[in-house]
Structure formats: C-alpha cells, structure tokens
Image (cartoon, rainbow, N blue to C red; front, side):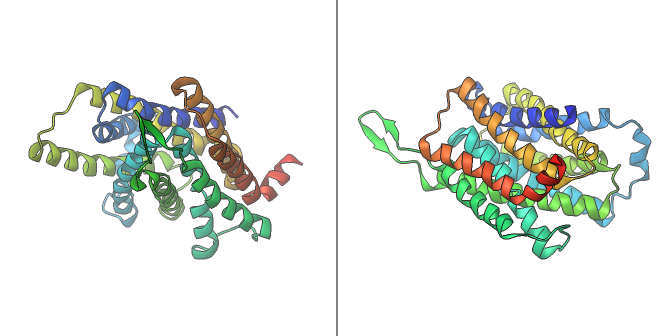
Length: 304
C-alpha cells in the first residue's frame, strides 16, 4: 500500500509544481527538457546493477521505439503543464486520469488483450468519462476590469489535448513494455524513453536558443530538475504498486486515478485557492463514477 500512496503523492506533485511555474517565472518548455535529465539520473540511482545497460541492443526495434516515445513524453508534458496553468489543476488532472479510457478501448478492440468481457455498465463508464472531461474543463467568464472576456477556444481545447495525449502515451507504454520488455525491465524502459526525450527536447531547446532572442535561466533549469524527481518516481512506484497487487491493472489504475483527481483538487484549493464551479464539481463526481463503472468487476472481486 505504501507504493500506492507514494505514486499518488508524486503524481499530484507534478501538477502542483507545473502550476507554480508562472509565479516563479519558469519557462515551462525549458523546465520540461531539464526534467528528463533528473528523470534519467533518478532512474540510474534506482538501478541496482548498471552492468545491465551494457547488455542492451540499442538499435533493436524495442529500444528505437522507446527512444521515439520520448518525443511524445515532451509534447504531452507541455500540454499537461499548459492545462494546469491556463485552465486549472483539476482540469489537467481530470483529463490525464480520464485518459485511461483510451488504453482500455485499444486493448479491447485493437490489441484484443482484454481479460474480461465488457458489460453495458463498462461502456457507460467510458461514455461518462468523456462527458466528465468536458464538464471539468468548462470555466466561467473571467472578469477583466469593466468588461468580461471568454476563455479562448484554444485554451478550452487544452483538456481535450491532455486527454488524447496522455491516453496515447499510456497506450504506447503498455504496448512497448508488454511487447519488448520483461517484468523486471520497467526501469530500463523508463530510462531509455526519458533519454529519447532528452535528445528531442535538447535539440529543440538548442535551436530555440540559437534562432530566437531567448536566454536559459537558472530558474527554469532548477524548476525542471525539481520536477524530474517526482516525475520518475510517480511511474516507478506505480509499477511497484502493480507488482504488489499481482499486476491487477484494472484494480490499481481506477483507484490510483480516483485518488489522484481528488487529492489534486484538494491541494489546488488549499495552495492556489482554485475553486470549482458547479459544472466542474459535477464533472469530478462523474469522473469518479466513470472509473468505478469501467472496473466495477475487478473492484468487486478484490473486496470479497
């Protein structure tokens, strides 16, 4: 259970840290690039035998695809950060956690690796998740002196982009780890994928610094390094929790998602005074119901 709670805690830290970036004048893109240096360093510290890296074929399909996944890591992280900053921590957390619908659908209809038959209640849960996503991202008009302005369409699309990006990311992680890596190689996979993010992100960052009139601040570098530790540990302890519960993903992920959404909303309310309107609260409740409906069979089995 300790692995479970640590994973949830570190995941909530991600949203809160990125939400704080504007206040400390941290460039989100620069910080996210440096975050992956901290991820790799953390992974290496948690690897008991570094000799294992000398036995890896870095030109194999699994390694190359894992490196390429780093591109998606950078992109999704940027969108999650923008959603937390421009909409709310709750909307960002809700969209990312509701994205579990995408790997579930792919597992059921594309990979056909589901270990259960979906009932009408399961399908209703998927529908509820999509509705909850929309409700969680709706914001009221923002007062601007004597006038009122609506949030731009682009900002309103951020929760949807977070949902699609995080869902695609999780689907590819599930596919790659199950196809190319053994149960004890999850840390290796994470280090390779984060290395791909470093290569892609550093290339973009170098190009930006050379072409544009932008400087790299120490605030952004430190902010990224701080972010990288909980980023790596959130997934590391989630994988540990999965192993502790017999790899019952259908049980672990729903509870993990519910706790993450609730704690993210609570922490954002305490630290940043984020208040949810009635529609947002309805979306949060609907999200919890959706997760329960998607995995009620597994939850029922475990509770026996």
